[in-house]
Length: 347
Image (cartoon, rainbow, N blue to C red; front, side, top):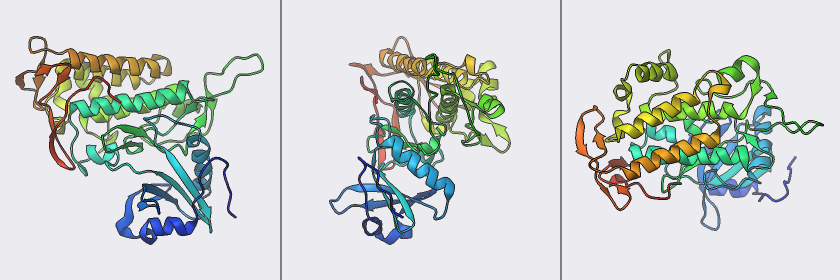
């Protein structure tokens, strides 16, 4: 039975099949627990991503309607845009704007081109602004509950867009006396390695659960490592290196040159986000403010004040600084070598 959702564009199954070349293997660009993702082109020429649910999945059906309900009223440059949906012939599909540069995980894993330090810092800041919007400007506020590198998409300009709201929950509503509870008691859902340990133990979900997950993403941006690999935990590895003043020994080689003071502060912030105790983590507002300060530190670097380190920790020399930019920090993207500079309005 087909269900229509007010205010959200409905696509017929035939339109989706035509757009995705009958869901051919060549059109498939991703796959997850929910189903498969296809690149498609609508009749008007719009390039889209079509997420097709596995048939007969009750979990998928719940996530399907949760995502439609939430994304239809969320509008922020750092959140992926929902263009429409299909619910017809026992098929459920979500249609999004297409992100040509894939996911953050694609780049950190080496499947797509590497990201240099300016790009990583901008991705961290953009993702954080998107989550801050969910926590403070969405009405009612939303807890994402599944922030991870594969749910951060990158557009043609490498601007970060937080995606996949199938597990998201509305923040707790005020009680009869107007007091807002600090948590939601709920069954634990999320991705191993990114799960807030306090939420896992107590089943109490808070906005700080998103802070923890985002902190894991920050550690991935710094090290290139997965949250859990060969039995090793990324938080433990980075914390040991940081406390031993060996932070630079675990920085991702693919990141290229970087300002050491900025990387140190980024690592410190990431580890505070990943504290086991909820109360010790910063709020999302504080996370965004700190990242903006780190960005400004990089912009204000001068040849006398800052040096750029190579990925091996060796000094290259003073950072080039001119007119509010730090240049000569190069990366190889999917389209080939390019020079990326800091700008005054990161997104």
